[in-house]
Length: 336
Length: 278
Image (cartoon, rainbow over all chains, first blue to last red; front, side):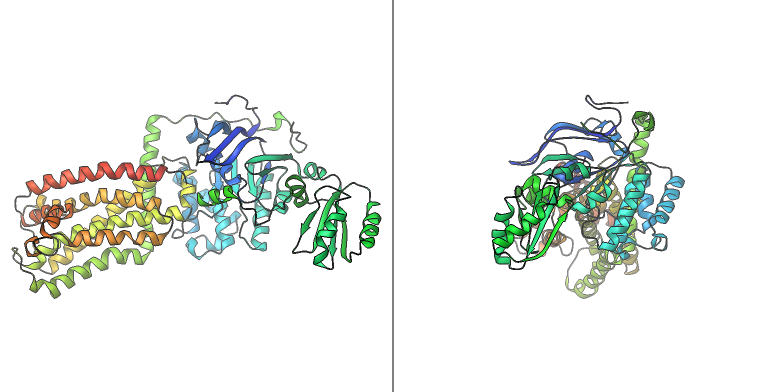
């Protein structure tokens, strides 16, 4: 069994110094990562951070520019074919054949994993049941709703019972109901012991599903740990102040800057938030200072930091800001 | 240092089953099986998308009927009747239109994200192309047989041996194969289905400035050398000679040279388009 140098035996994914450039644009700038077997690992970052590029390299769709990576003990370049026998991939867009039925889609994918026909059929049927598609199993996928297509796509990624499953933004574009359904399905998988690498730009999603999270930004892993470890990084709790007058947001940010670093202004929500210590006593101080500055408070919260706060404190930006889609995003979007 | 609180250390990890490397024979069997599966899948799509099937069956038959009965009387040909002149030409044209489906099919799969899945599966990456080509050749055989049947109903008769008669559609299908390669390259490259439609602008004049519908001698003198040099004319002449039972040797050799030449250009283009990082 091929074990690349540096691979500890119970790691499902090992990434060392991985880079990827498109011309002059660096999508990955030296990623190191280790994912142990049997967990859901979340890759969290905004659009264009390099998450999809990393997944594409790990699933052998693209070669890296430099560095090395292995999945299930197989090197992405030297053992690409063996690697592909050990993985399942559900990409950003449901890769489903519209003109085939749900069952036919699953059976075909199973056959491409070289499972015997009878076994392929058996697994297709059982996955159709498991993903609640029984009534739709004999209908063409073109008649499916967005949520059904994603479930079928996920089922296709699972048909070979892969050791490692890659889910690239599995719930992007889904309605809340379908998203919840898919989350439940992923949680079941995790309980079954499949290693899952999940990319997402939804902090809530990583928080709920992943037992470990790597935060990716501009082609680098900028933080890694469990959700609670990452939240510790914010430095305790978060004070969030909603102001009555949006014109006072900047002034509020300046005032809150005294209590913690990098206060974040959410213009749409009329809210300024900042990481503070554990001492709830700070609240009285915040109220007093704001009052003195003549700032009218609409709402005030002293809460556990969310992963949003983590991303903010790590990068100084919100994870879901649309307006910092940089060149990397353009490149990554263009090559999908 | 990563600390796992939720997982037992090594003993709980399932022992990794030894991965047996498939033998060369197994790999070969898989490659054949994968191509056949992909072919079957593409043929299913033909059958389930009636508009595709219409494009490759009803439309050429309509051409055959309209040309024969509307224009045929006004076109002077050396063959006994116009349908005998037209059928080989229109079959070669139809096979070329069939080659365009290769491009359309690949463009569709590429744009829908299906390639992402196929490329992540443990099959030979060329399967996507070989399965496409094989399905399109099978579809072309079916369409050629259908057109010959309609032609015979309209008065077309083969003038040569059984072998020559079979060779007529075979030449048409063979000639279309490297053209499929070109369209594969285009289909694998385009960023939208609309872009695919422009390929029609190239193929349509190419098939008309030829001996397929009218004798080249009836064209204006400046157009004749272009029509004569058109490889499509050469393939049509070969198919027509075979249909009539005349000596086709020269045209067959020239068609063979063109097919070889076009293949040598088309295959690297298609392979490059397929391997292009996306």
